[in-house]
Length: 351
Image 1 (tube, rainbow, N blue to C red):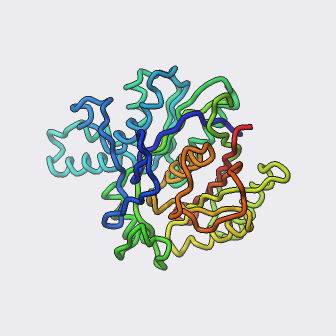
Image 2 (cartoon, one colour):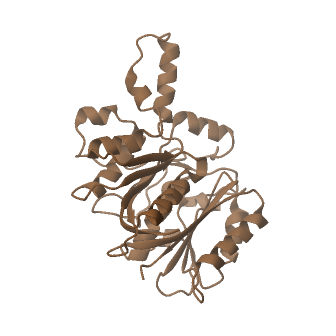
Image 3 (tube, rainbow, N blue to C red):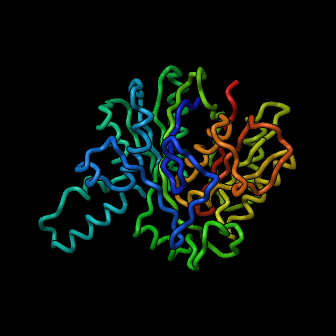
C-alpha cells in the first residue's frame, strides 16, 4: 500500500507554519511542555475562533491552506488521541458545578475527537468521506493505512490526511502520574542526555494532500507497518522484515528519523533500530522539536517530506549520527508510544 504526498502544512511548537519556516532555531520547552505556536488564523472570524478548542483551531488552521483554491478532496481522514479531551473535561466539570442545570453546549459539541474532521468539512463545505481514527499511539498510522487503502481502490482521488493532538490538562496530569512525562525539570535542549523515566509533553497538527498520482508529488509513502509488542527482539525482527520487504534491492535507508524521546525505558528499541542501519545511514531525532504525543509521527512525516523534497536542510541539533549517504532517497520513520506501540513508515523520492 502506498500513495503520493503533494502538499503539506504543520503547526507545531516550532516555527513550521507559513512562509517563514525555521527549524534551525530551537524554541525552548516551558515547564516540561512544548506548546504549539499558533498563527493568527485570518480565515476564521473572531466569534468562531473563540468557540473552537485548541485542537480544532490548530487542526483546521493547518488544513484549510491546503484546501484553498483546490478541488474538494474525496475524503478527510484524521488521526488523533486526546483532541477534544480538554473541552470534554470542562463539560463534565460543569455538570457538577451547575448541578446538571444551565450547561453551555459549546464544550459538549467540541468535546469529541471527530470535531476536527467535522469542522474542516463544515468550513470547506465538503460532504465526502469523513472519518477520525482514535487508536492511542497508532491513531495517525491507522489514518495512513485507511488512506492507502482508499488510494489503492481509487488512485485518481485526492484525500486530506492529518494527525492532531493537544496538551490536555487532565491527560497531562494522569500521564505524569503514570510516569510518561518527566517529573523533574528538563529542557528540550538536554532531553536526550536525561537518564530518567518519561519525556516532555507536546502537541501539534500536520496535514497532507495525498493521491495515487505521482505527477508533481513531493514524496511517495511506500510502506507502513504497526507493531504491538514490548519484546525488543520481536520489534527488531519486524523492522528488519519490513525493510527487507519494502526496500528495493541494493538500496539502503539514507536517513532514519528516530522518535527517541529521552525516556530511558524505550531507548533500547531505538538503539536496536539504529543498529540495523549501519554506518551508511544518517540518524536524526525529532522529539525535542515537538515533544511526545500520540500522533507525533505525523510531525516526523512532515519533516521527512520537506527533507526529501529539499525544502528544508537537516539542522545540526537533530543529528545523532552522520552517515556516509549522499542525498536522500529513502527515509525511515520509526516511532514508539508508551513502549508497547511501534510504527515504521518508509518515505521515498518520486521516481
